[in-house]
Image 1 (cartoon, rainbow, N blue to C red):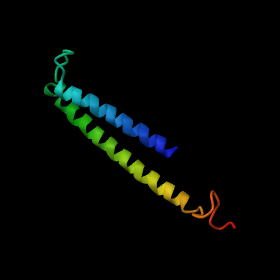
Image 2 (tube, rainbow, N blue to C red):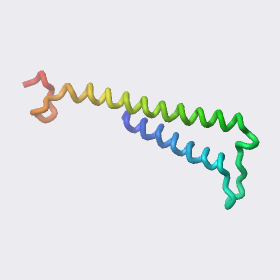
Image 3 (cartoon, rainbow, N blue to C red):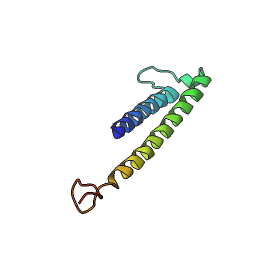
Length: 87
């Protein structure tokens, strides 16, 4: 379940980064202007939000690894799906 949340957060951050790159560079084919010339505060805010979103995704990955490690260390390496304390 935690891995799914990590994937969703990372996918959202990647989609936002892709769209913000289009906002920064513009597109002549689609006749979209570069917004950062007009809205510089917006560009700084969205840039910092994307960076913080990636930091949150990395922290969620670390938390997921710690959780999985704490779960799987309880199981016996020799017996399939049995706890270490059970015989």
